[in-house]
Length: 416
Image 1 (cartoon, rainbow, N blue to C red):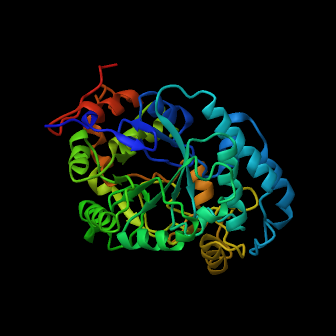
Image 2 (cartoon, rainbow, N blue to C red):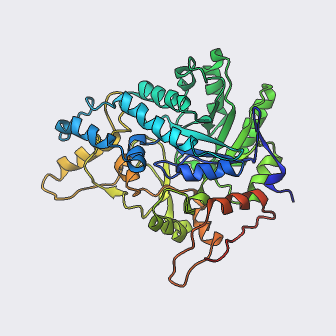
Image 3 (cartoon, helix red, strand yellow):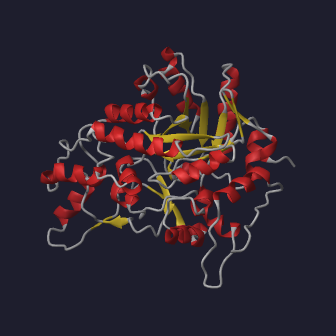
């Protein structure tokens, strides 16, 4: 049986190991994780989700504190339309994270940044343009547009000097979404450099409804490949979601994929940004502990471990400090849900909000444990210590296991 290393991902003049590590926010896909992928010849991602929080945590800036101080007067107000992001600070935080990452890059691979459309930030076009343009200014190798169709995103940076130089990719979950994107952007004469086709077993936000189980990644990939062939479009396709072994990946490359995007197995590596105690929760999770729910204020279904502390928590909306999911009118579904419960239980010392979650606060605190459907298999990829804990892995070990394994095998690490 072939190994993943028998194939190469070609992005322009770059020839890469066909492994892309997905961009997990908030700072779950750290610089260290992305840089390991690049060192080994693949593609790594950092994420710009809640970039000011990441900057404060990593580089000792004070952006969140400054924003909170500016809008503290509005904390009791359910109308958040006044709560705007300082675009200069947003650019500074993005530049700092990207430049600091790229300055450390070694090896033949590439580092991209994952930009989520659903981080609307009370000014969707303005904030997204700043995030993308600044990442290009700071030297990022490429941008992956995620969590939405991004029909107008390319146009936001069409005047940037690196618009046709940097790699620009999109994530879709259907051939229909791809068609819409290509039609909308036809006037730009600028095709995506790659297409990540994300299936129903992926982690985090899904591009499906609650009927996700009725869909199949291989079928969707086949439809996308056929469409591209019929339209005579040569765009690399990278399947994603539920690709747990190198052999899984090989099967997709043999059907015409150019590479694969993987993430779940890297959540329990030392380079991953999750706290070590949370990584143990990922190891311990059983198949029945993983659910797809609709608590995200974005409106997208979301997959997570059902014991996540943020599920059902009735914390006060913290938009003055964060506010990344505020729409163009300053609204968020969690604000409405929280105020509804406050009005229904005016004397309660603590309320529970079960239908939505304050995603900004809980992702910042690592209390929503988003995960892929096959997270329950992680315990089979390592050793268990006598105290019941699981040995963390290195990103290099997981990367090379994907790269060189055969026959659906998984290589265990050397015992600690």
